[in-house]
Structures are given as structure tokens and as C-alpha cells.
Length: 191
Image 1 (cartoon, helix red, strand yellow):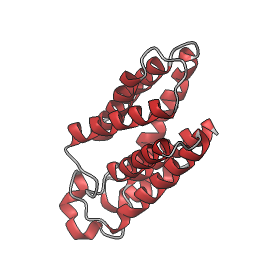
Image 2 (tube, helix red, strand yellow):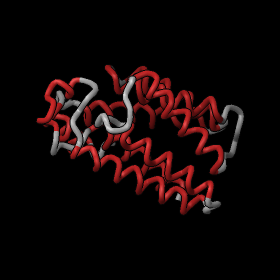
Image 3 (cartoon, helix red, strand yellow):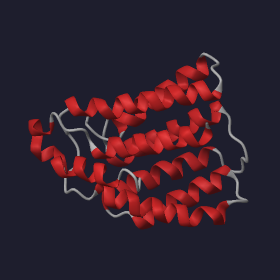
């Protein structure tokens, strides 16, 4: 997030208030500070603690949405010290559902769901096809990237940018893009 702070704020400035990159960088600096405290914790606890840091360090809708995403994922793997592809599918499905329930958005509304939904579908398909984890996560990251990029051609239907209507066409959604960066960082770290 730190490396992409300017880019995310530039994307956000075109159809939003221009602070998305700064907020996301600040948030994940706080996450990074807290991670050493989680070194001996189970996966669910780590994700829960990340979700709480996000909720407490990013104002507005994005803090609530990303915080909820991590908290919902955490519930799926409470007590686990290792997760497999089946666990990842459950985790990301739960996170997606949490965001849909909270934000009332659907794929196609030009939001981070346009990144999450195809990524989750790619994970599910990889699991169904018994792909190895590294291939599944490559598919996951690639689907997330395509999803974020697809928002350029959409009309914003939810949130502050929705008031701009058709003027949002041609602009990639900042939240969808930061979501891709999170998913890709997860993929790269596992790789």
C-alpha cells in the first residue's frame, strides 16, 4: 500500500475525494506494526487482529468494509495454524458475503466486490479442479487484477462516486484496485 499510495489517491481523486491511497497506506502501516504481536497466534486470531486494526485506523466506509472482510475470514479458520485451499475458499467467500451484507453492493456496481467476486470464483474453480495451491493463487490474483481493471468500464452505483453517474466510466475504482493489491500481496507472500 505504501508503494501504491500515490496511484490509489490519483484513482480516487478522479471520482472520489482523493484520500484512498493515504488512508490505505496509513492503515497497513498500523497492521505491519501489530503483526509481530501475532507471531505465535493461530490464523483466525491473526486475521481477527488485522481486522480490528483496520477498523480502528481507517475512517469511513473502507475501514468498515475491509475490517469486516478480515473479521469474517477469521471466523472460518479460528484455531487453525495452517490453512489449505478449501479453507481459503471458505475464508474469502465469508469475507465477500460480509462485504455484500454491509455495503449492499453487488458485482458490477464498481466497488471492491468487482475484484473480490472473480477472485473467489477463481479459487473455487481451482479447488474444484484440484489445482495445487500455487496455481490456485496465481488464478486468484489474475482474476482479482482483471476484476479491478473491469471497473474502468462500469458506472458507479454505490458510494460517494455514484452521484457522478456516467462520468465514472473510464476511471478505475480505487477500492477495487487496493483490494487487488491486498490479494496480490497475499499471493506473493505465499509464493
